[in-house]
Structure formats: structure tokens, C-alpha cells
Image (cartoon, rainbow, N blue to C red; front, side):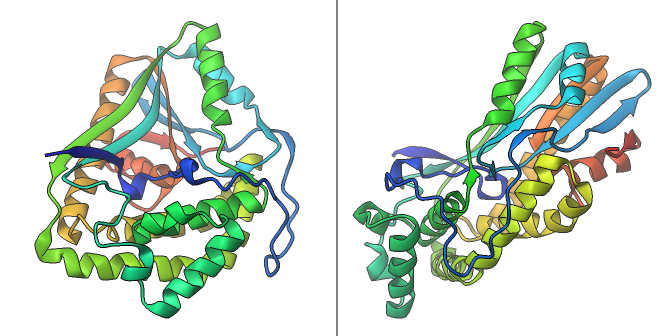
Length: 318
């Protein structure tokens, strides 16, 4: 039986479907989305959280994608911390192995066979506008179609999924001979839950509909969030992080091969593995930099809250 590995939905931070790019590069702002000037040039990003245990320090950088196209990330604070570090932790990913199915493709026919007629017509209209007339998209699960639509729409308004932050981190770490330890976890394999397949299919369609309903609002918020991350405006970021976490969780529950209890359990497993890795780093190193998606770091029950609850000293970014 084939086993496929996918990135866990609630940890998704980058576009998953570059293979489906339409080949166009029209970054003009679509009708209906207010124009907002994106920051350009060199930007510092947000400050760092400082976690302490005696003389040992763990610095945390929260990342966000997409970022403004044309931005150059340069943080003197991060570069100084890397130079003083024993190691850098990241990039972070958690993957789930799924038995017997291509995780992003529908096993029940094309989208036109799965979606209600009006929903499919609306999807086709938005697909043609933001993605292009790509027949391969008809093979996607509704959840995968929603992710692709969202990422392409964000690119059309001047946002980029290029990993400039990690490119710079590798450069600085290499210059100072600092080791980088990836935080990559694989769970499963799981077998698609036949008992919850109907509800999961309904959730998947619901997720696509909700994505289409909120697309223009999400585009506006994405630009504001990208600007706030680039300039280090934590006040704005904090107002949007819980929404990011909520969106990611609803995404996790929309995949047709996971029941809600199973998704919740796997999420908890991933979080526990991450926290254990951070605590080991605090004990092992005098100084460590860890780089994580910002909604995992600072949401209400995120990494910072968990470390603070465990008794570590935590200082928020200045």
C-alpha cells in the first residue's frame, strides 16, 4: 500500500502547489481589494523573544509568509544572536503519512463532481481570475483547491512566498560556523477514516466556500500582516495571530482522511515534540536561536505561553 507524506495543515505556512502556477506574473491589485502600499527595501522584521534558564538562553524568531515582494530582510539583532549561538534550530515542519491515497487529489472524481453546481461555478470564476485556466486544478480536493486559490490571490497583490529569511540565516550561520539543526517531525501513517468520510467531505467543501467568502478580506489582512511583520509592528501582528491560528485549525479539520479527534491528537503530538526539542536545546546550549512560524510562537496557547507556564523566564520582543 502506498504511503504519502504531507505537511500538517495547521502548520502550513507556505504555498503548497507551485506546480500548478499559471505562468503569469500579474501583480496588479484586483478590483475590490483596497490598494495598500507594501513596504520595500531592507526591513528588520520583528524582535526576538528571550527565554532563560539560569545562564542558558533561547532566542525565538517568529516568521511569517507571505512577505512583501521587493522586501529585503535584514535583522542586526538576529545576526548578532546567530554569531553568539551554539546552534540554530529550524526550519520547522511536521508531516503526516497517509496510507493509500494521493493526499491532495480527490478520489471521488473531479471538483465538478464533488462540489454543488453553484459552488463549482464560483470556484471556476475565481480560479480563472487568480490561477488561470488550469485543468489540473479540477483533480484537487476542495481543501487543496482553497489553499491554491488563496496563495495565488496573495501573490497577485504583491506578496511573495520566497524564503528570504532562511536564506539569510543560512548565510550568517555559515559565516560563523554555527550548526543548524532542523526541527522536522513525521507522524503516522494514518489510514483514511471511512466512518468520518462524509463529514470530512462536507468540511472540505465548507472550507473552500469559506475561503472564497473571505478571500478579499483575507487579501487585505495579508497585506497588513506582511507589512507589520516586515517592520516589526508587534501590536498589529498580535491582533491577527489568533485569526491565523483559528484559520489553520479549521484547515486541519477539513482534510478528508482525518477525523477531528485524530487531527487534534496529532496536533498535540507535534506541539509536544517541538516543546521537548526546545527544552533540550535550553539544557544543551548556552545560547540558541530557534526560528518558528509566528502564529505557533505567540498565540494564546503557543510556544511562548507553554514555556512561560513551565517556569522559564520569558521576555517579550522590545
